[in-house]
Image (tube, rainbow, N blue to C red):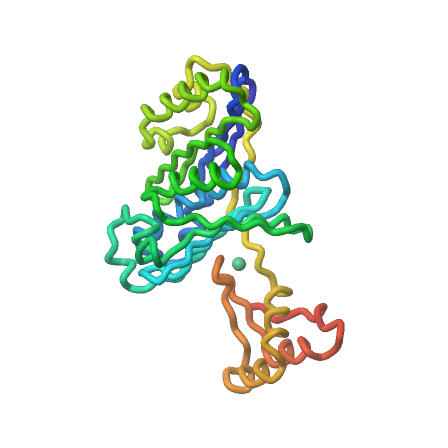
Length: 303
Ligand SMILES: [Zn+2]
């Protein structure tokens, strides 16, 4: 162990030196706080979002391409939609749509309870390479109670990689640990994998959120193993919204509709559902959207 990761908002990958096991530890503090502060989420939704943010960062760390990972819950219960995104640079964002019933749910409510039951909800994990390559989507049935177990099932089924995930939250703070048996590991490696699993089983998830750095945590967890811990990668709240994207969406709505909104309300005003940023197009800016083929360069008025 040579690198000392210490940032509260970072992800550290590691490998066992003498066993085909790899993993990652993620800690999200200000990142999760700022994302969760964008909306007045009820407690149950706040905890689930915090766990999914940590899980999304862990999953993104396993991707072989520099794209985006999206976890999307659809349901017809108290929560209709929940979206968490993480890209290869660990820029995270999240949003949700919920009804008043969500406020009545206990803080420990499961994804299944939020979605209105296993038959009514599903969790989709989408991997988009963002380079024009094929988009992969896996659907996870909401059979398990914990998000960690749901994602373990997904990794085992879709990627055929034996995986363990531990997630823990405390207030807005979210932490997670991923352990994976490397593809190609032989039967003789099973002992090391099972021993690491037993260490994880005996480990209190609460200790994850108390850890401030990967190395002391991993040393306490796996004292009998030599681990190589890589330099931590910073995580942050990052939204991909922009004036240009809003302008393109308005062009899709069409000139007639946009003009009628401007005539009624004086401007077209919209908010990013992820970060709450406000975009406003007054009459001149709205007209410029449809003025010429290169109208894309027209700068909208932002307040
Ligand atoms: Zn945004």
